[in-house]
Length: 474
Image (cartoon, rainbow, N blue to C red; front, side, top):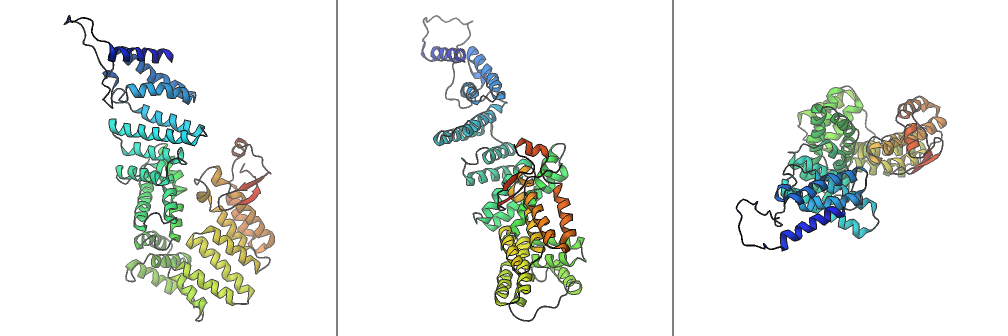
């Protein structure tokens, strides 16, 4: 290493300081090659031969250090290659992504916050230099966004992460690279929940995500298809959860999704009622032919005599029109006014189901399920619902696959088991769900790699926040 920098320094001194010692001109001698330090994208061919050789060696040697994860040693050699010939051979750009990797790893390894910020500033400088010298395409911008999210998430502001993803989307003409879909979906979901993005912009990006999944799944080849399979286990569920925000999705979204579902199951009252309320939720025009068709099916196939006038009638009307929060308020008003414990239980569990299936607020759904259980002993339905809430939380508590998403099966199965233990009438359904989700529990290898042991206690975080017992699928 000292040899490399020593030779480089010697040549720099010679190139900059030494004056010719003779005025004699020898026309056959090679012209002295000087380094143009004002060239921001200097290439290897622009360097004097000896310096070029040492720089070429540095391009190779820093990669050797990276293979052994010796990032500090790699950085020192990388800096020589990068600073002397950022343009490399005019074609290769790997040293830019390698530099980002080196400084990302150094940022992870240090506890010095000031040093972390300096490393991040260096990463941004490297990215800016890449754009200056070679430009970047959509895939490269997508990789930058991915790196910001997964490797530098604590150091790059969320706003900047989001903007980097959106740049990649625009550069790729609104077609997303598969490895960016899940992190971008998470950022979009959080920004929508926190009202940091307009509904119009949020809908636009949600549609881009869904179209990208459709196109990517249809046209993928080889290992990329596995990536799209992982995406399908996460992103659509997260986007569907945004249906719980009043006004987020419009008629086009609800009609495209639920009218198609209605056409697949034209005799299912559950589907018919859901399609009708969702299309109204999206403010579809009463004369929309799709809504007219669904309403006709509802009136002829799924008619139920409405309750007498009062809060209960108003609650059902609000729900049927897709006004879910108003429906919850009215059902709760009825619960508070009645002295009948059976009715309290019935409508509290209904509120829980609205929070689960329509508003997509799982903590509130659990709260009302527990409230319902207080008014009816030996009743398994509230615990069945909580089990379903937990089992559905894989995409909410993790990436949709893998350990963090699998551990939600443990408390879910706990709830199914509790439901059947107190209420034999739900035993068949509970056993079905237990069998279904037991297959998705972590494997023995998964828990071994995390120094865990089957039968031990485990605390599941996320919104669930329950202690459970470790079990394996095998």
